Amino acid sequence: MNIDDETLYALSQRVGSLLLDRSQMLAAAESCTGGWVCQCLTEVAGSSRWFDRGFVTYSNEAKRELLGVEESILVEQGAVSEATVRAMTAGVLRNSQADCALAISGIAGPGGATVGKPVGTVWFAWQRRNGDCIARREWFDGDRRAVRRQAVALALQGILDLYAGDGP
Image 1 (tube, rainbow, N blue to C red):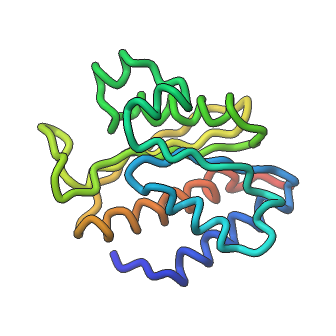
Image 2: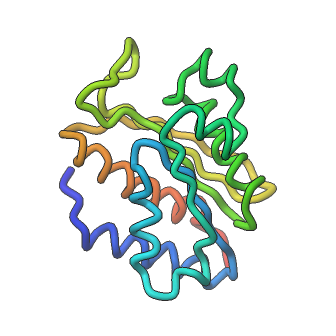
């Protein structure tokens, strides 16, 4: 899938408009995307009115220290797992004033693949404060940049989907 910068900017603008209309704030935790989601969001002028903060938790140590992801989750299920991204969103909500959170952890390549987790495996989670956490796994094709770009787009679309059908 070919996702260009204009697509990412348009998604970021839509996320911002949605949150601004609801007077809500977003925070994000990123691993394999290394802050790219936050960069896209803050590219939108006025994003400080709806974007609270980002956590780039690339290492397992950062996931534990900044977000409170339990060591047992990382050891037993790995950093690229449903349990990890769910714990990441919970940590974002615990450590911010945001009304909703997203988390991403994956294997962008070219190395890092394990049995059952090939390059391109990315886990996502989205959660509204006091709401259920929604987690999803995807497998993306392409090189490291392509995998990361697709992950950013899906993370942003996930916020829109989280609020779909929800009035202001």
